[in-house]
Image 1 (cartoon, rainbow, N blue to C red):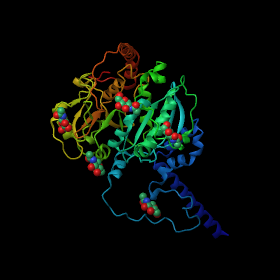
Image 2 (image 1 turned 180 degrees about the vertical axis):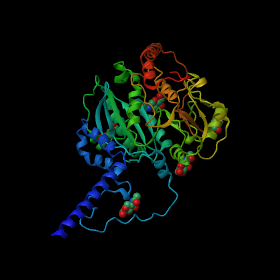
Image 3 (image 1 turned 135 degrees about the vertical axis):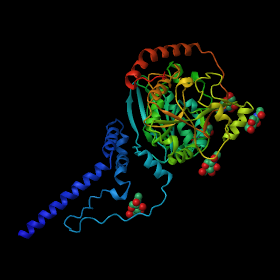
Length: 472
Ligand SMILES: *[C@@H]1O[C@H](CO)[C@@H](O)[C@H](O)[C@H]1NC(C)=O
Ligand SMILES: *[C@@H]1O[C@H](CO)[C@@H](O)[C@H](O)[C@H]1NC(C)=O
Ligand SMILES: *[C@@H]1O[C@H](CO)[C@@H](O)[C@H](O)[C@H]1NC(C)=O
Ligand SMILES: *[C@@H]1O[C@H](CO)[C@@H](O)[C@H](O)[C@H]1NC(C)=O
Ligand SMILES: *[C@@H]1O[C@H](CO)[C@@H](O)[C@H](O)[C@H]1NC(C)=O
């Protein structure tokens, strides 16, 4: 009797220790709580599809629990009743050089995100997040996501973009009213009748104003029927007056699209860009190799982004593949720095001349560390960054211009370093822009400037503070 009680107490103590240990592992493993909350939020959204994808949610929030075998929670693990505790130490793993991905994970401490469709309101808009998903999924450390926005009339850019980028793309499409059906057909055509990279890598989100909801919004399996590839794709040669957006004189809510695409990206590093800007090849892997070196300016305590130089090329030119080819085209005049004719100050990059003269080298490096001040106070850089960078102000439209200026101000006040990359660049779809007078746009731009000056800028000063040399 006495012995039985003693062994009962010993067993109870062992069980208590095990419970304490398991709880400790869960909490110190971090952010499971956040993950659960995140997936909880997706569950709370309207979409009935979430019911079908429930296992996916579990998988996503379970990622943190099962990434490494040593912290795996197996309910059957605590061998209740056996007195062979404590458990033997885990076997020594042979020390090998960590892979680039392992280094990125270590440096960024990033977390994988749920990848589920959801229908949610966002201000005055309905958003179909992850409406049509890429077939491949990515771990947060694995690659870089190109995030962008468009309407269906720009979707001819997707394949040339993909052929150079060859990494995930997250795209938010503005599709109000009758533009919605053409948008879906365009997606179907791209997935069924063009490069297989579209299915593999591109995730489409769709959004429209609550005042311009399409008549019908099919559920996600709408694209199960193969598209008839002998039909002309709806995104070719769209004249703007055949679009619902133009008929109803709607503005293009560029920053809603930018933010939606950015927030849905699965990877830690993102390249928020415009769909007509084609990157030089292999940026994503070269960039991660650079980050993995974790030396020099990469170790600065300041927050960092990695701007790319922008160029445009004349209508019948090829898009340059290497910096060497780009330099040749700059010297024979078939390539120009971006918007040199439209707005020379907007994309003027620190040390631009030196960059253009510097010969191409192997791999990617930081060419120069710049700031958005002095001569570059109105710089609108396009850069590789992360989800922690400030988002874009959703009150600003494309037509009103200055749509990236408020983000630029925040980056300046937060003392961001701009680590300009040496052998990587973006080239606009061929065709050099010339200045066209547009009085309606000029009027809207004037109104936008007032909105920024009177309302948004005072808000930014409250939220981010002020710093000498920073301006919107
Ligand atoms: C986890 O365990 C499984 C089987 O025991 C093994 O195949 C796998 O390589 C292990 N993974 C890690 C990250 O140690
Ligand atoms: C596909 O479209 C073409 C051109 O309109 C048409 O001739 C053909 O019958 C269609 N095929 C199918 C299977 O619907
Ligand atoms: C689109 O327009 C271009 C020139 O403007 C023309 O060459 C091309 O054939 C047109 N494509 C279609 C599908 O109509
Ligand atoms: C991009 O990377 C692939 C595989 O690493 C390589 O085969 C290809 O030549 C590279 N392309 C360029 C333009 O560097
Ligand atoms: C300019 O240089 C590029 C790259 O070397 C070449 O392909 C193109 O033909 C040249 N164009 C002219 C007009 O010289």
